[in-house]
Structures are given as structure tokens and as C-alpha cells.
Image 1 (tube, rainbow, N blue to C red):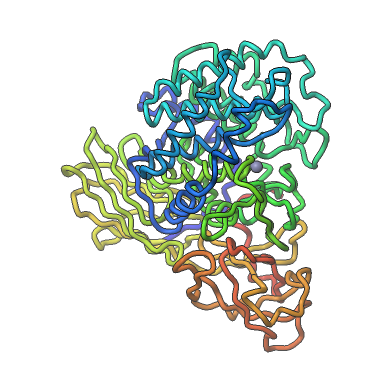
Image 2 (cartoon, rainbow, N blue to C red):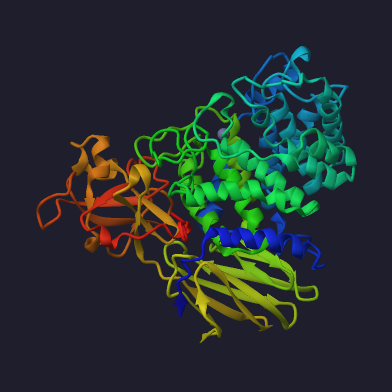
Length: 615
Ligand SMILES: [Zn+2]
């Protein structure tokens, strides 16, 4: 039996976070402030669409881009006065893909990029692309350096490369030592506010402090950068300084959350609370999981053009993952999968080669013309991190967050080796089967995320119904002595949902099933050739026509589409619908409409992610 749990506001989640995060830190469970821990990238294998995206990002994107032509030369020349490439982000992604895949081609690229970067480092520690007079203060130099330091540290952490750690420290020391030479009004009143210009830097310095124990990096973060004091309201609109920059904002939230793990303080959760509140309570989040327009916070739900910067999408995912680890709130997992299957995967061509800066829900979508710059590089990084968002270790057991074919190894109970295998065709159906293979019988809690949309979900263990009530929006816990060969089956009902639009989309609905949003691609529907793009959103959908999804390879092999009847733009007057159209999965590169009219709005549902909205 499933019990809808739609009334509890997200604020309750945050109150829990404020209290429990700090309390658990002192609980001595070996997890610091966290109730969940990710598995290592080498301990997980992922299949399904998530695994396919990892594979095509490696094979058709990372391994075919030309780093020697497009990424490395500016770092050797060091002659620019401004600019951005994204070399650090590329290295960070390559290191993680190399660790996950074990692919010698990826490892060769990793070694090449790291060696060339270290070779380009100046005697004083500088790594970057600017000429001497412009270093540090020139636009994006600190941003580029911060990610290069982070990437070299990642290389040390995954591959034990001492020279990478040394190079990272030298570059970080260079920045810390020269920071006092920056004018007090650096970036103030320019097109880019100071906190945006240094995006990512605080997290880098915290990581370096944790790795080395050197207090200088922590001091820099706490005192020089004043990370704990950061308390910028949500700024809506593209104002001077692009203060309301979603990527910069969420990256800082993430740094504060990581500092909270080191030095628990409720104040460090408030900016994240602000961001979540704006996204979930005040129309900041689009139905795809994307946020903002033209890189900044917006709340008008305009679906056209520059919607949802890919960098922001990547950092939203990290913030959700960070909160899931801190408090085990299953709704963060719902946000992760909504964002993955829609906003994130729509930022990439189905074959993996091309990447996007933005992902609109209305009108044409554009690919970014180069392999460099922020969004392509942040896309690769977050895809490389996805394997760590499938399973999590808990204090004594295992939590399953994402449903996708996967295998993992970890220790449960008092250090008993466990192998777990997940088989599913999710999101085509909601049937998930897990096989557990502990080295010896061992009692531990197995947690399964029950999405908010999955009313009526059931869980069986070795064919028998599991004891307890299956609640949506929570983890269902089965605690028992597990033996090798035990099988758990989860069934998540996949009903169609007509989800109400808000603000500019008010009065219309989007079609969802499980975590997926569906969209209308006119090229798949020749009957629409006479309509212009602006009319697509005025088609009226016939809910009675929704049936079983049909196969479609437009987005992924073995993917889905749905046949739906529509009335022509307006409300249509006939009893019989005018068109039978095919809607495809949202990452369809030629999708051009997502919201449609509905004759009888009483069948529309609220977006379950916004449950408990207080207005
Ligand atoms: Zn970007």
C-alpha cells in the first residue's frame, strides 16, 4: 500500500536538515555529518540510459575532441589578457572517466593532459592562459586556475600522482599569496560580480585543505573569501554584475555544504535553503529540472531560448546529492532523476558528440559550437560523477537511489563484503529487481527510494510482500538477515501525469510518466507542417487517448514515445480530436513544445516535486 505524502512542505525537510545535520555530526557513526556516503567510482558499473550516456560521452565526445588544438595551446602561450577555456574541468572529467572506465585510451588522455598542464606551469606556480600583467585580476583567470587546481587534486586522489598534488599546491599558493595584491574593489561595478568571477574557488580550497591538512587554504576560504558569511538573496533578472548567477550561486551553496561537514553550523545551510525555496516554492524550477534564463535566476517560467544553463544543472545535481547524503531525504533523489532524464540528457545529442549551453522547453534548441568553455566541460564532469549517485552506503547498510541496470561492491554491517546487482528497464517500466550477494549472511537495512509519483508502489523479498507501508517521497527500509541469492523486487506504477504549468505556462499541462517529461517534435509529425512554432503550445491534448507507450529510438535505443490525440490550436470544437501525434522523450533534439492546452483542467495534477507549496 502506498500513502501519498504530499502535504509535507519542503520547509520541513530543511528544518530537519538544520537540526539533524549538526546532530549527526557528533553521533560518531563514522560518516561525519552524513547519513549516506557515495561509493567509489571504481566500485560501481552502470548500464541503461545513464550508463549509455557515460559511454557515449567518453567514446563520442571526450576521446574525439582535439585537446592539443583547442585546449592546451593558450596555456603554453600565456599571452591573453582575458578569456576562458575550461582545461581544469576537462582534466577533472577525464580523471573521473579514467577511474570509472579503466579504459586505457581515457587514461592515456588523462596522463597527456596532466603532463602538458604541469609542464606549462610557471616557476612561480602560475597555471593559466594570461600574460603576466593580467594574471589573477584578468577576467576568468581565478576561475580557470581554481578548476585546474581542483583537477590536479582529483588526479592525485584517484591515481596517486604526487606531482599533480605538488602542482596543485604550488598553483594554490600562488593564488593565496597574490590575493592581497588585488584592488579592494576588484570586479565591483563590472559586468561580473566578484563572487561570480571566482566560481568554484572555495570548494577547491576546502578540498585542498582536507587533503593536505594545510590551514592556509581553510583560512583563505573562511577569512579572505568569507564563505560562512555569504548571504546573498536570490537576485532575479540579469542585472549588472550578473549577481543572480545560478551556477555561481549553487557552486557556493555546495562549498558551504562541504564546509558544514567540516565545521557544522546551521548558517551554512541557509543559502541552500534559499535556493531550494526559490526553485520549489517560487517557480524557479522548470519541469525539466533546469533553472533560470540566460544563466540567472528567473521565476516567470518562460520556456524559450536560454533556459537552464548546463553548468547550473550540473551544480544543482551536486547540491541535491550533497543534501541526500546529509539527511537521507528521498525527495533529493527525485530531483536528481528528474534533472538527469530531462534537463541534463537534453544538453547532449543522442549520439553523445554535441553539447548544449541551454535547454528550452519551447522553440528550437542550439548546440554549443566548441568543445571548450564552461557548459561542455561541466557536462562531462557531472556525467562522470553519476555512477556515485546510484547506490549509497548508510551507517550499516545500503540505499538505492537511482533505478538503472547496475552492479556495485561495498561493505555492510561489520565489514561484510556485499555485491549487489540491479536489473531493470527503468524508466520504460517501473519494475526493478535487486540481487544481493553478501560474503556471509548479514543483517542490514536495505533502503529503496520511492518516488513521489509512484503511488501504489510495492516491494517483495524473495517473492513475498515486504512488511511495512510503502510511502512515496521516502526510502522504504527492509531490515533482515540477507543471504546470497536474495532477491528484492520493486514495482513503481508508471501512470501518465498531466502536470500543471505555472506562471507563463499557467492553464496548460506537460505530459510526464515516471521521471520523464515528453515533448512534441514537429519533424516526427508531418501533419503539423503548416503550423508555426508558436502554435504548438496551443494544441489541446486529449487525456483519454493516452495509452501504452510505443518504442522509439529518437533519443535512445529502446526508448519510448507516446501516441496522443490532440485538438487543433485553440480548444478545438469537435468531439473527435483533430490529430494523432507522437510525443517523444524530452531529450529529443528537435523537440519544440512541452506544454499543451487541456479542455478539462480538473484532470491536471500539481508537480509532485513542488508538494507543500505554501501559496
Ligand atoms: Zn556554462
